[in-house]
Amino acid sequence: MTDRYGRRFPYLRLSIVPACNFRCTYCLPHGYRAAPGAAAPLSLPEVARLLRGFAALGMHKLRITGGEPSVRHDLTEVLRTAAAIPGVRKLAMTTNGTLLSRRLGEWTEAGLNAINVSVDSLDRASFARITGHDRLEDILAGIDMALAAGLPSVKLNAVLLRDVNDRELPAWLDYLRDHAVGLRFIELMQTGDNLAFFRDHHVRAETLETQLLEAGWEALPRAADAGPAREYRHADYAGRIGIIAPYSKDFCSGCNRLRVTATGDLRLCLFGEFGIPLRPFLQQDDQLDDLVRAIGGQLVHKERTHYLHQGRTGITPHLASTGG
Image (cartoon, rainbow, N blue to C red; front, side):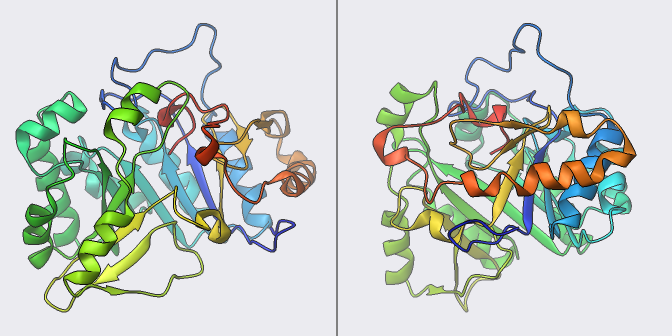
């Protein structure tokens, strides 16, 4: 899969459910509310057919997202189905970690080999204010379990919020000294329904990068199938730090991922203006050729960049709706 700008797309992010059980201030501050008449998420057979189509086009890295994927009762079967698709080499999941300590074993047995856990603060009170849940200690225990189990890739995601958690770098550095995780600091993005919050709490991620470089952290080369983070390492720390800065220059030049929503719409960009319904091509096993043509024929419409700098957020009302 290659677009008209020469970018290749070996990486798919698949949302399997739009619902989330957290009330994060930057995403779903009032909790998840299903739209009236909303379609059901893709079934297991539909997921399998979708993934076979993407694998036929060269997809080899898959990330399961939501909403919160663990809200879906058959998550383990989704993972097992995905792991069985020929060509899928890396099976990752992004989660808030509330079930990690209880279900890590069955998820890894099903084929999960990489996990990102959302941890927006290491301060228990701040974490509860951001997420609406006082679950930090249990989530950190689940992360320790994942490390002890030898999961090949364990990463943490923290959305940077001005005057909320943007002064916590010293605490994070203490944590990274002996935790071999990849920590992702994510710049807050404007979506369709968070403009006031964005204006109050947006902070440029480059500020943090400057602090890291001044403290002796070294930038790493980007892997071909990596996500959007610019990674840094330091000899004194077991963990690494990644910066995801969507408002930085040329952020989209290295884009290598496509997205599919929980109901089967292909999104060429998280902040795109339209979705392409793939569900009609997922009803029978003999529709694979039609599905492949439908996916491949859309790449010509992928834009060179998003338009967040102009305040254009596309059809994404909040990140849970598409799978951030």
